[in-house]
Amino acid sequence: MARLSREHPGRAQPGRPASRTTGRTALVTGGSRGLGLLLARELAERGCRVMLCARDPDELSRAQRRLAADGAEVASVACDLNQLQAPQQVMAAVHERFGPLELLVNNAGIIQVGPFDALREQDFRQAMETMLFTPLRLTRAALPDLRRADDGTVVNITSVGGRIPAPHLLPYVAAKFAATGLSQGLRAELAESGVSVTTAIPGLMRTGSHTAARFHGRPAAEYSWFAAAASLPLLSMDAGRAARAIIRAADRGRPEVVLTPAAWIGSRVQGLAPATTTRMLTLAARLLPRSGTTPRHDVQGAEAARTAPLPSWITILGDRAGDRFGEPRADT
Image (cartoon, rainbow, N blue to C red; front, side):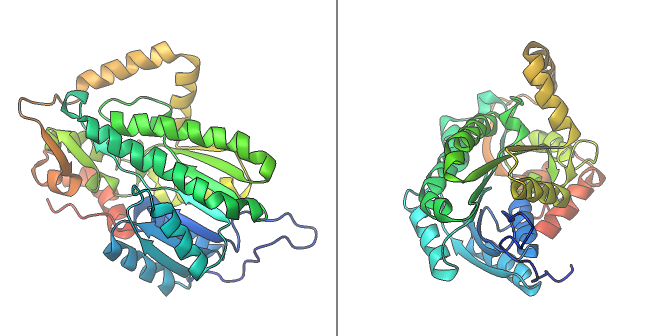
């Protein structure tokens, strides 16, 4: 990996517009691996001072060392963002290390895969806490800093799952639909105060997330279809390219960025012909695995991979991405 550039001024130069993502103090949640780590790298390459936040201290330490080794000015804070006091704890860490926050990236998430019959209410509550209430609380805590900043910015990582109700992903879908609505509403309400909100709506990306996802019902069967979809080139996109596109959109103050042609087409079809989309999703649901007579719950993808009837070559691109971006390894 090339050394990170340190020659990025953070404010406007004469005759040039200010940059929202250059030389800023940034906080990236879910920043220890996957897309979050790549977003942190993109910001570091723009000369940002980056605070990483995630739950696992060991993963955070590894991510911090990787970025620091390439010249990033980076720190980290380990905490469970679902705890009510977490936003104040995180903001205190940012202030102590870097000063006022100027750029917030709400990226933390959880993927739960399985048929509705195998999912529990607690799975939906966990998804909503992680992907709706956590960014809500963190944005509230960050707003005093963001309003005082020149061009304060919020980037909310949602999903095409927040536009299209994909089957066997209902907790994720419900939370992402809510997060997309929150993000778009914040854009409208905060614009007057100078705070820009960008909603990122990616499709499937090759981050290795299939090994970290949680599977319900028949985990090996669910893992097989999800891992294939998250790894094959025609269905997923390179995560590094996605991270660059998201940061460019935030830098330009765009309200929304939709990533992957499939996500763009799916979003448009859903908006223009919802009945057609529903029929297509109904057919897809019929092709996916049933829950089984004794459904299992909350099996991590790295474990489900051991018994999944899936040739390793199908997930090779996703597995390589996971190795690069710090996801759990699937030892099949």
